[in-house]
Image 1 (cartoon, one colour):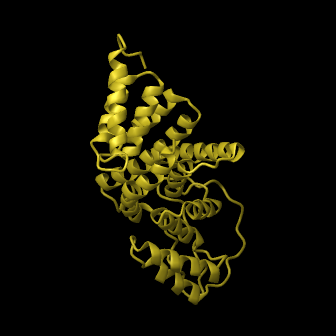
Image 2 (cartoon, helix red, strand yellow):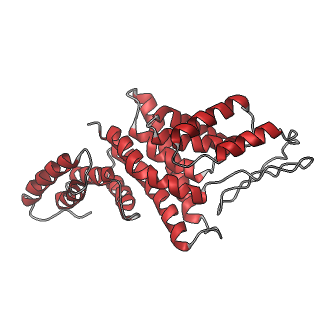
Image 3 (cartoon, helix red, strand yellow):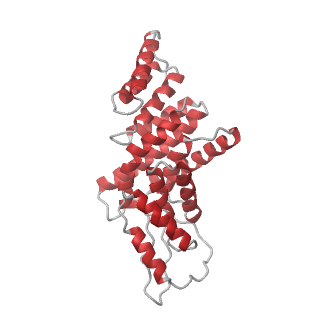
Length: 291
């Protein structure tokens, strides 16, 4: 079953378009360019995160006015102009491969690649971001959600991707559960942004467990992913239904399939068919098994 391929497209259409808007409120941006003659300030850790102690950095190179102007042009591009973000961002990295702004450039490129269904480039740009900031929570959630949707057919690479997904998802959840509300967001904005990324991370972790046939744990993660936000990804309901069915919890499977069968998406008819099958199997059970 190629459910992970469907997840990539649906997440891109339904999940990350929302997240892209929320990231504009919470994504880490580099410090403002220094004035001539000043040393540039180091980029701080994202809000609510504690940066581990680092060895003293070497003296920063002198500011390059052309580099700073190029970054400002890149940062000014509209959030939903994905093609322009890619065009200008790739050109920036070619011109300034060691730029002080590359963390923000790679992170924004990863988002744009996601929204244009360029999976491999999304992963590459996301992992470049994490080389510069291993605790970039937005990118951790993005990779945790995206990597398990297109797993390699090679068993060794497949397992490596699952291990990487589990590591990214677990770290994203840890950070998001500790993160503090920044002063420039309302409580509602903060909770919406945090819960959207938490749902992405729990969904990715659920798919890791699903691929490993650890259905009880997959159920736990997909339940969280569908409960955190008001408009869950229908693929999460579909995978939740499959996990319930594999755990012989057919009553709950029918409920999950019913929810994704009520949504307008490419697998709506499949959800409805699975719902009917789960109802038939539930009717043959004297009582539902205990979770």
